[in-house]
Length: 149
Image 1 (cartoon, helix red, strand yellow):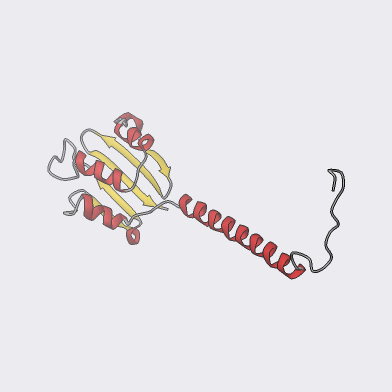
Image 2 (tube, rainbow, N blue to C red):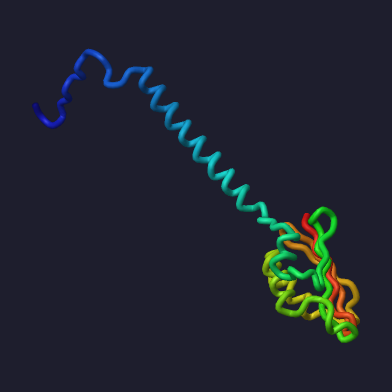
């Protein structure tokens, strides 16, 4: 046989039956569909914020309830910090940081809170899972309302 000559195709049964091809193609398509569904569900779940109970936040950061109150079936946390007029009541800076960390407050919000002056009036912001409104005065301290959304 020379290089240009071709061998005849042997007659007989085909290498793969039509049913076997459909089974293989169907299996590959099924695996692709399951893979994309899994990726979609994982991406959707990762976008939903992890929301902790504000009652649990109070227990972790101000167990005595010295400056926090939980309201609205656990969906609202009212926070009052120590001020010049009431140095013995309210939460201190460490408790505020604990609360901010527990609700996963991003730094752009916490930095705005720390920079608030009495002249600024009431401020508001939000992040995934929460909204916050606050005001500050040196005499009365920080008053903040955190709401789970």
